[in-house]
Amino acid sequence: MISQSDKRILRNAAMKVAEIASLPIQAERRELWKKHNGLGPVRPMILIFPEGSFSSGELLPHATMQCEGETARNIEWELRSHIYEFEHFCDDKVVEKEWVVKKAISTSGWGISAQHISSTEARGAWKFDPVIKDAADLKKMKMPDVYYDEKTTQEKLSEAQDLFGDILDVRLKGVAHISFHLMSQYADLRGLAEVMMDMYENPQMLHDAMAFLEEGHRGIVRQYVDMNLLSLNNNGTYQSSGGNGYTDELPAPGFDPERVRPCDIWASAEAQEMAQVSPQMHAEFVLACEKRLLEPFGLNGYGCCEDLTHKLDDVFTIPNIRRISISPWANVAACAEKLQDRYIFSWKPKPQHLVGAFDPDMLREYIGHTIDAAKGCVLEMILKDTHTCEGHPERFDRWARIARELVEAKC
Image 1: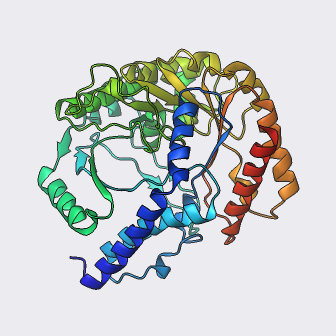
Image 2: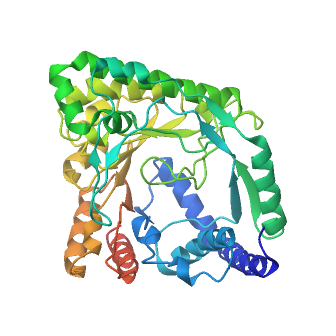
């Protein structure tokens, strides 16, 4: 239960969010994103996802929350994160006048779970501890079942409506972010080095594993459809590996508001673990499966931190592909020449520029180079994977201002 004093704090924060959401700039940004996602001629768009710097408390420490109860403090933090981003980042994020309640959806899992060997350092990297050691172990995997807890969902919805219903639009959402990570999932179970060797020494085992995961994910989506658990994501919903879904192209013709179909929504896939292999191996061992999984969806995104410079011709064959991630390690000029204005050039600049000695001149040259190289492209700049800012939250603000100044000067 949330105490009355905590409710007052939450409602005041919600009113501030509603006030920000009502500003004309939000409608302007929303329309810009629709044009951008529709491949229209608009300026480069900017989005910042502080991620690790948020979770570590460098930007908005949980200790600064005013609520006393743990549940209330978590709700307060989410509300204040929207306020913080609007007040600090001059990016193009749209603040919506809503509070989203997610349906209580879970799965039975895949029969086995990944095991990791933890680092001895507080924020160090873990090591793979493979649970699939040979082809026989693939038989331990099971097709997942999907479960929906309607009772818990309705309780959460009722609580949110009681708390915010007269301030924010309380919306119930099911599955609105569909993203396939087959190779990441399998590498967790098999080990990344082992997966690399299997491409040469045991390719059939890898094909069998990918086929099983493909069918399992197809079954999950089928259950979402049968159980009517999909929700539209043609809005501010996080899309692909960075971006949003604002578009007038979805839902598809024949849409029934009471039953969302795969063709009505965005989906995405990535295979970062394949960054070091050839385009041919990427296409053979994972992209073929991903293409079949993505085919039913209305619009698709592809990629994350893997360099797709030499794999773009294969990526272009994905049905309904729209947003393509251009990683910090990609050749932006070569990618721009390929993408032109036919796909969204979703550039992921280097997050390490927020650590060490902050160099505005170097940053201007770096961002400016991509803006120049991507002239004629549908460019978006997505600053993410920012695991730390070394206790300097103002660096996000400075990065955003520099990017904004360059966009206004060059475009």
